[in-house]
Length: 244
Image 1 (cartoon, rainbow, N blue to C red):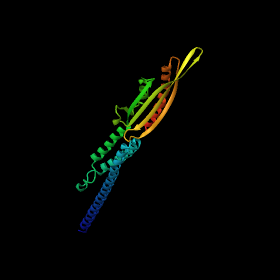
Image 2 (image 1 turned 45 degrees about the vertical axis):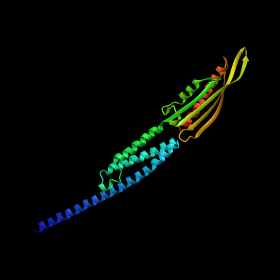
Image 3 (image 1 turned 90 degrees about the horizontal axis):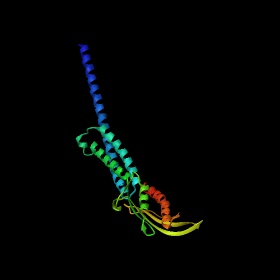
Image 4 (image 1 turned 180 degrees about the horizontal axis):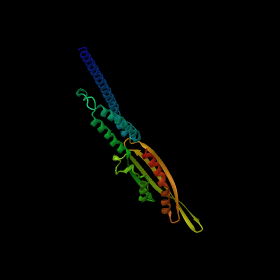
């Protein structure tokens, strides 16, 4: 009889201790869930406060700063996404405050799409070049070819562009020299380059250039040679600006 009472007491104590341990585990799990829930809410508030900053940078044409902020925000959202997966199902009364996994993923995808858009520079080129009054289109083609790359897309209107490139070039006769019966003609090509941010309408570059070319045939050929010196000079400045 005593042995039976002892066993009964033993199992009773064992059951009580087991239930208490489970209650403690459940309590700890509930506390962890609530802490993680609060952390997710706070982190999403930070993300939501960042989105207007990104839009403001885009409106100001500050694409590089916008890309950096987007990249940091995407990394932050990936951490929130992992935490939300750990949290799993939550109580009904908390569902209104905690963003769902689908909402977090949608916000992240929208930012990825925006980053892809900012990767490209939409460029409108307005180029007027002539050789003593005759339109010279090869110069404009050479400029566009030189600044072309995978991150540049050319558009037909400044209304849909990030950058507006304005180039005007005039030519003028300089002199001719005779040496040993051979005449060399010299001419200048005078260019003005204006680069403007289309969103802010801010002129970020305004420069003038003059290059001299020489040829044996005539002044027109000399002017073409002068244009050849202008192409790399203007192209380098344009590329430096639109790739920022």
